[in-house]
Amino acid sequence: MPKFHNEPFDEATLTKLGLFRQYSRAWLSISLTHWRTPYETPEQINIFDFFAGRGKDITGASGSALIIVEEIRAYCKRHFERKSSAPVSLFFNDHDAENIANLKAHVEQLRCPKGCCQPEYTQLPFKDALEQHLPLMRRPDTANLVVMDQFGFKEVTPHVVARLAGCSMTDIIFFISSSFVYRFCETPEIQKRFAINPEDMRDIEYRTIHRHLCEYFRDKLGSQTYHLAPYSLKKGSDIYGVIFGSRYPLGLERYLKACWRLDGVTAEANYNIDGDLAWDGQQALWPDENVPKKLDIFKRELLSFVREMSPDNRELYLFCLAHGFPGSRARKVVREMIASGIIQTEPLSSTARAQAAALYLNYDAYTELPRIRFRVSDTP
Ligand SMILES: C[S@@+](CC[C@H](N)C(=O)[O-])C[C@H]1O[C@@H](n2cnc3c(N)ncnc32)[C@H](O)[C@@H]1O
Image (cartoon, rainbow, N blue to C red; front, top):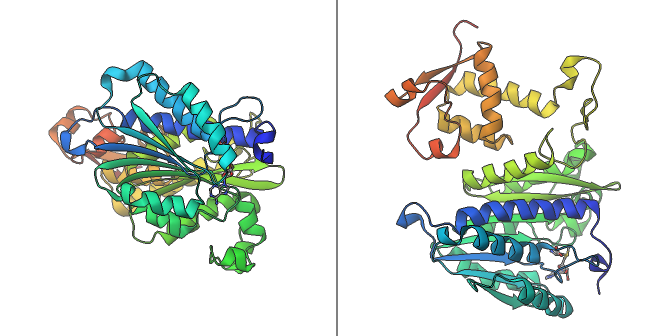
């Protein structure tokens, strides 16, 4: 049995798996539910776990593949009447034959008795499994969730992410050992996957390395519309992390909500990523120092964005998501700025006039015509 499964999952692994669970739950509730209009409904729903492991750790805690099976079962138990008729396929891959045999046994015991999802197993190197399944993910009538819980950093490269981002409705969530990329940046092994200038790397604060690596993946996507968001995990002196990706603002919103539930200060890490003086319940001496840096920077950047762009509610919603603030968090910040006379709103429709207090910073409003415009106040 490989070492990874021969011992209990450590704290950081449990946090990572918790995030996988939260996001797969949110993804299933969107993707399995009968959609509003027929043209949006996927014909086929697929979940791919390319590094599926053997199912459980030595204490019986579920790994990524069993988490998916448990969450589908829970969905069917609670919401079966809402479920769309689209078939659901689960693709579990691991290059280790013993892992796949163990996983199969666990899945058969646990899977939903309604039999509405079909598991398939492959025992291939990741690259081959990806090639085999890409044509299915590219079909415009499929909705796909791709989990890539690799060891280290070698398999999920910017090229792999760009190929998945180019598929139709495909969300990804993957793990990467960011501090290895940081430490061994100059080696040919890293350089052939991540063409990062070692000089640039030296300027990065170590604790923020995973955030920067996520930005690197984003840069490599060029003009592709695909949202990426990080979550950093510290284990001893090493920094690892999860990167999430989706073409859809709703996917990003759901992921960010899961992150805010885990870390109420930055939604970005299981440690003090920004070196905030007030962190983990501690209070700084001066009240100003109790404002987390992430919130402080967000407020300043939001104000510049409003000053320069006078955005409508759809544009501001996207700006907030890109800065890690889902609608509920963003509304609180914007309301405070309105209350203190820094920002003002201007209705763009008669319904918006009637509901001036609603800021329309949410996904439903994003899918409709713009309702209000935000401007810096004339008389602060
Ligand atoms: C970090 S573990 C994943 C554990 C699993 N997701 C879980 O939660 O229990 C990585 C797994 O990927 C498999 N693996 C490593 N390299 C691989 C490769 N290149 N292709 C396919 N599987 C690989 C290993 O056998 C191992 O089970």
